[in-house]
Amino acid sequence: MAAEAIKRENSNFTAKLFTFLKYFILVFACLIVFIPLIVVFLGSLKNNTEFLSSNVFALPTEFEWSNYKTAFIDGKVLLGLRNTAIIIVISCTGTIITGTMTAYVLQRFKTTFGKILKAAFLLATLFPAISMQVTVYRIMNSFGLVGTMAAPIILYIGTDIISIYIFMQFLDNISYSLDESAIIDGANYFTVFFKIILPLLRPAIATVLIIKVISIYNDFYTPQLYMPSEELSVVSTSLYRFMGPYGAKWEIIFAGIVICIIPTLIIFLALQKQIYAGLVNGSVKE
Amino acid sequence: MTTKSVKTPKPINGRLSRSYIDKMVTVCLFLLIPTVLLVIFTYIPAAEMVKFSFEERDQFGVDVKYVGLQNYKTVFETPEYFAAFKNSIYYLFGSFIQLGLALFLATILCSKIRFSNFFKGVLFFPYMINTVAVALIFRRFFQKGDGITNTDGTLNSIITLLGGDPVKFLSTEGLVNICLVFVSIWRYIGFDLVMFIGAIQSVSPDIYEAAELDGANRFQVFRYIIAPSIRPIILLQMILAVKGAISVYEIPFIITGGRFGSSTFVIQTTETAFKFQKVGLASAMAVVLFLIIVVVTIIQKLVFKEDK
Image 1: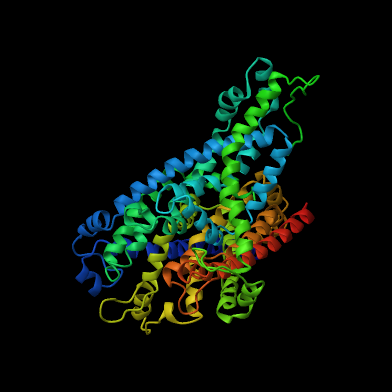
Image 2: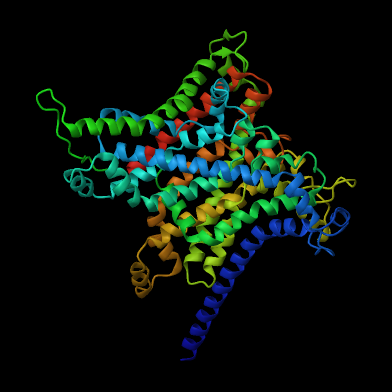
């Protein structure tokens, strides 16, 4: 009897220890995520003297909001946000229109040309995107598109093959009988696409939108290469430019970082579930 | 993928049916833009890349000379070019640590735990943060003060607080790569975590319940239920890790600019092309990278075929 009780007590103790360890590990992991970010937030509210003299974890004695003003206006983050928004809206619209149309034709009509194109898209996923710019740059240049927003927009629309695959995957599960009965009723393929297929593709469109917005907002290489001028700054390149004039003024750089993280945080908090689902759906397509 | 297709009447007696024309018009119109974009911005540059890799040329194409395999020789024989590949090993090693950690955290988060959504959210969030912001945050995090304009960054402040001496994290060869790999893990682990949690949760809860009733312990549940169900995801992530490790660019480029032995092959390629204007050599480097990716992809296909 007594031995049993001790055993039960022991297993109870192990279970508690396990639970404690689990929370300890999770909290520790979260601290590793938080510490670099908290330092940024605290630092963005200090003035230069305080930033240089105080401990990195010390709270600011007085909130120096002017850092944010400097970052926003002089640092062109505001301009960057505007340009990024324009590029995102145009590229996403373009990707969705061309992507759904391509997927519809490739998935529904088994033409020889369609098969060749599908293979061509598949092969294109293997080209190393950044290294390819060595020659893509020349072509952009010959069209006179370097130094315009058109260059990144065209690349975001034209080289997005993953989206086409997501749409095709989704179309696989939409019954052909829907198309067929509409055709029998005298509808043409345009009507079928716009009235039946496109509305049904809404969940796939949401997935593509999520992946697309995150990747464009975070892209640094394309805008840096094709839009070097300051008026065409996007969020990434305007932040990158901070390293020059504000090289030693980390409090202003930090304010810029916070401004750039806020839209991401809002979108993340609002769409958390959809983002997780979108990424999982998007990656299994490889 | 099903092989079924929308049935369209074939042309009868040489006269095309209305719906056949309709179909062809749709196919042409819908595929026009994507095909044009694919040819102009993917295939023409790819073909040019191969052609240029046998030439000596600059960005403007003045004084082009055919040099045969010379560029490829340079890539493999010049230590500074090939050395960049060595740095991929740091990232590859890092991504395996990342996968292991993510799997470990995912199993914890899928057990009975409070606030699991909060933890998941926090651990995932860095993946959403802008690349440049991440790079700048860690440029400061690892900084060592020079006593004049810059003070010690976060990590060195902690070290000083604990009584140690500040370390030159970002300007010591070897150490700099470990720091950069840490940044990469910090940023991307959330993605793996979400993938693994998705896979673990796709197993029906009945199976876990049955296992519990049968008296399976935690390790057995992991070994016999969780591990097999997420095997494809792990394999996929491992292959992506290899591709990722040889294509690292942004984080080292912004944090160190590739200095102190932290350059990567892609940084080398873009610098060769745009800074030193050696387009021929850069094209050869891009072709080499492409060939490596092709080999990895073939291995991926073979592995997955076997898996099925």
